[in-house]
Picture (cartoon, rainbow, N blue to C red):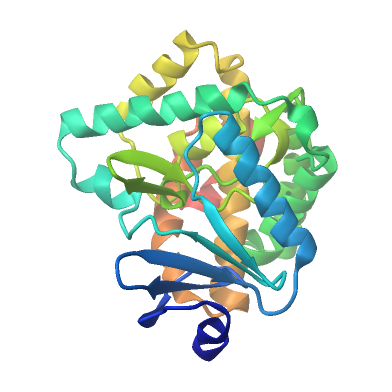
Length: 298
């Protein structure tokens, strides 16, 4: 692939592969004499995927939401993009002092406010009840079934049908994977990445994805963050917030189970305990999951 890139991009001094998790795409940093770029490369031609990324890049930038700029498309297989460096919000937030953390939370809320202004009609893709039911079945198959027997798994599956049916599906526009590992800190600003799967989703979806992030714990700052979002008019009632958060966390556990046991990607094990704590401390978890909850969370 390095040779492929050198043959199509002039003036490259050095090509370095960038580590990426849970993606079929590969990423490379291209070093030139006075600048760097990042090449995002698909295994083969993906014109629809490339077009989707171009579409959402323009959409986000037009709404004042920082995302990496696109400089070139290479044969419907790769994009040459702005290099944002290596600083994820996950690291900046975790290592920052309290004042720095509060500042970053406010900037995340600013981005959510801008996302809320995007009309959901700009995309046909929808996180609807059918898709959420599929995610809960995926969670049962790849995570819960490893912790409980068949009968218990079936009882939990029935309860998850009830969970999905209680979520209000009045849609808003959503990034879909709005968490700290998809936020880079570049020139002091938070820049979103991995936004190609943006869709219509329950109104609180992106907010709960960050408030109960599988990759970082807000701790006591979660209440401050949610209060800020409430004041901005970005949240539905708190019952809907907790229900959506519960579904999102269970969906994440299904993904982690699949990555660890089906893909052999053991690095996702480190995120399971935190996500289970999110589930265990969700105020509506016991009502929705009943006696399945202790079997999941220990």
